[in-house]
Structures are given as structure tokens and as C-alpha cells.
Length: 167
Image (tube, rainbow, N blue to C red):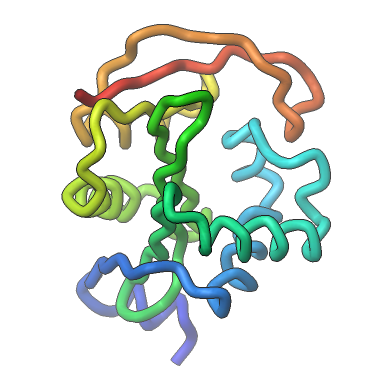
């Protein structure tokens, strides 16, 4: 039975667990998706550099200020969610394999993550046109508090980024 069938033919059992080095290969593959990268917008300069990706995340897995969790559906890795500190603010980030968008997985995973990660306030940032991610944040109690502009590597231009906060 394929991974896709294992997930779509059964009830979705969504779980989080601490990210392990062994997860990084799968997570690296998800972020290579061009459509997903376009929506995420704020990606590394070269998202195809696997050595740089693995080195960065191996370091982050050992950083006590970072909480990296892998999203599993029916024991299959489908994405990740993490808390990190940026310029003194606690922020969240998440990435879901595009094959699993629109099934409520990101919302459930983020809600579960916010039960584990209780640091508040916590901020989320999203590209102005990433409506799916905006909905996920809003369903999880985040409120839009402003916007900023920044260079989006995945689009090779400056775009508006919406800032969300959960107290």
C-alpha cells in the first residue's frame, strides 16, 4: 500500500513528535515543491542545497530555544512545525507536504503544537497571498496585527508579509 493510500484510506491520526535527524530527508524534499515554496515565499537563497539544509537543521535540533516537531499522519511524515526566537520575539513556522493541504492537518497540528509550546505572545508571519496559511493561523487563535515588507527568495522580489499574534 502506498503512503498516499495509507493516509487517504484511513481516518487521519495526526500526531506530533520531536523532530529527529532522520526526519530531515523527508522535510527537505517537501520544501523543494515549487508551488509550496512560492506561497511560503521567505525561503533560503538556495533551497536545493541539501548539505546546507541538513547542516542548518541539525544545528537547530540542538538549540534549546527552538522547538521542532514533526507532523505525522498515520505514522507517515507529512510536515513540521517549530517555535524559534527572531529578534527577541517568539515565532512559529510550519510546512506541510502539498499533497496533504486542505485536509485540516496543518490546523490540527498547529493547535496541538500550541498546547505543547506555551510561550506567549507568539507570532506568525505569512505572505500576503498565502490565504491557506492565513486561515490556519486564524483558526488557531492568531489575530492579524500588522504587515511588513521583505525580500522573498522564492519569488525574487520584495513582497508584503502579514504579521499575526497570539497572546
